[in-house]
Image 1 (cartoon, one colour):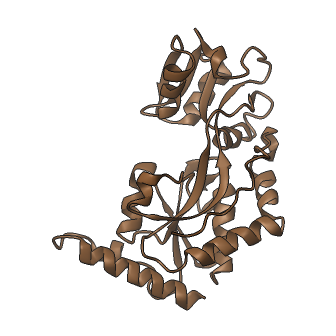
Image 2 (cartoon, one colour):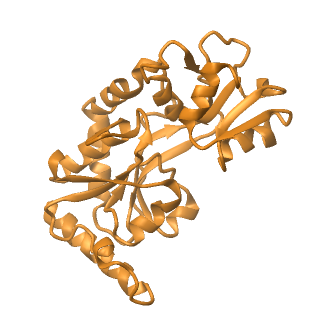
Length: 279
């Protein structure tokens, strides 16, 4: 199966290079896995509980899922090269062969499907709220009228609340969600908003345990998929690995290990999700 992966990724990288104009692209960043001795997997480096770098260690639910899938494809944990994949760069990184696949809270959308492929989904998240542990006044986005809400600069999460639920919400923007949680613990804001599992990861940090909680009333659906280059031949193998992960109990254990301390419980009506056929 490893040979099949190497052939598929080499073909995808070749197609990408043919489609690109000019010769300015760094050959090292576009060559792809090719030899099959290692696999490059994109993750977030700054999302506790999901994808987080601590020195040479990488932890989180996405990291665990990626490691499991890679092992099912024939790669041991020490053959994985972790590559930071910021949200705005994910499509480009797949198209240019900088990574072979991406596990980074990567929502499957029709727009993204035009330029990359997806396996999965392996989790369905939903936008939710993080509040102080002793705050019972906020049970959903409708309760934020006149309150202070924190989200990351440029995030669509906070704007959705202002546009669809509580126009009078006061928005504080921060460069990252960790800063938002700091403001929440300090009492500067009443709530933080983004996907529920991201909030759960933040709540599970030892320094935050017992001080904050996820409301548990999601008001959107975000299907997290595994980003792959287009025209690849491994999507069905990746899907088979995801389904095996659901069946053997690994999926539940990874969630418990990484976000269980927050008390967060995934939406049982949506999780584990039905894996979509590869297009």
